[in-house]
Image (cartoon, rainbow, N blue to C red; front, side, top):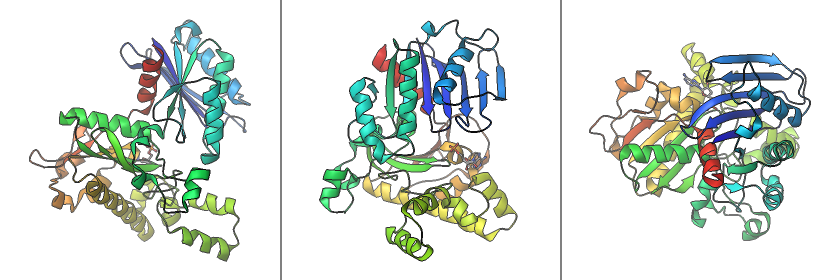
Length: 398
Ligand code: AMP
């Protein structure tokens, strides 16, 4: 059985074709700048090792982009299948499932209706995700589509964790509450760690540190709490997002700078975080280079980032009455030895002994970064969000 995984954004579309008999990716790629000038297509055939590197191809909308993807997958030179019949089902990443879904779901008209209703909570993401599903249903009408939500894994949170202390009617009428995101990554990583620990009833803190970043507390396989909120703006500091901030600071900046709602939203989502504090880049590698070159604002942004991650680790150890393992994942979590060391410094009170030497070795795959006698284990785990989507699609359609 082969599953096509689609992650449709407003101007981009990532795809991956996975063979579920061995969970190997056959081909993957990305369509970028869809509907804007100079669209780019990148594709890798992982069976033959061939690739199409940043080719300029006209893609005026998602329909054209998906058509190009399907044609390339069947192409004589670069393809991995001889016809679309070989694709058994399509798995779609959808950011927000609201309170409707605590698991992935097979698409029907009611699902689309629910997603459209929830789109108000994720106006930047859900409409683009829905567009991908609609195009796929039109192009391959006899295939099953499955939706895998970023929010679903976090639906196990109790009300005391997900409620905001706003007037209750804002929850009842407007559905304002914490939902959490990056659920597929938190699920995959916490399950992988539970396997490595050899026990299901473990207390695990997952630090997904990428350009977007979130932390979750997972106890006995269920999310107890997570750092992102109603939207992905909450929690730790990110590449361009503020993370937790006094909401009144936003009101004040709006008033003083005469900003509209849209402008403060853009300022907090796209111009803040590492980019906002450092001022030169949102990229963590650039930040580390800046720090090495003696840039004080780079150092400040680095310290703020690590400090905030550490605060959440402390909070989530408290939320679970302890912690068995801390996992680092995402671009920064998987590759950034220095931030991992800085974050774990001073966590000895939890019974954590960090192996600094091992942390510096660039070992690929999943690696234990604590010493053998450490009470709290630390791992670097390579996340696999596409694989989770493929697995759920397979589970619901096989
Ligand atoms: P992601 O959003 O998960 O793809 O992660 C992107 C982030 O990971 C960017 O901020 C990158 O700078 C960061 N990153 C990638 N490689 C490294 C590295 N070797 N050291 C530190 N950060 C890295």
